Length: 180
Image (cartoon, rainbow, N blue to C red; front, side):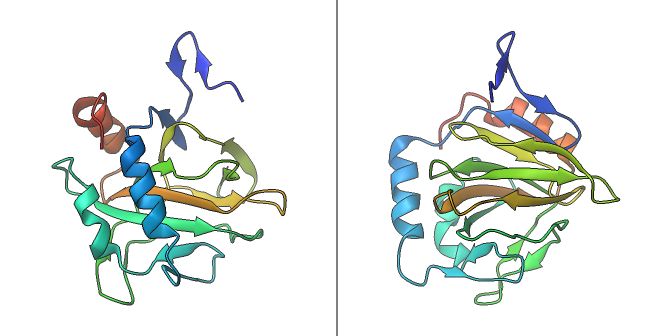
């Protein structure tokens, strides 16, 4: 998929917007080392695993923004179509808002995020390898399309309670050109 059109990154509102990946190589390396530790993730019913101790990665939110850092892992197909809900981590109680996320891949060949309408018909998909993406995870049904040919997908996310439109503006105003 060609993500550039007239030097503008791809956007498919209201589902997602592709943005530059603002993670430095050293941050990506450090996050991946943390993610690859044994028993780092908790499996949930969506076939998407959440990082077990999110409090230990909040230091990566050097943005000054009111958001929470999270790592997700997918290594099997068949993730459930769902809308994200705000949640508390079951191991330490950390509150994880899930209305909108800015997601950055830590791995390659990591599958696609598919979006669906209210009747669960596929309406959009995005593979943002090499980029980041603002995803409307609380506003629209979605899942990770992942096949046996894919490698394990691990992503780092900044998680927000704000709406998708607000987070798009936050990225433009406060994160564009910044390095984490």
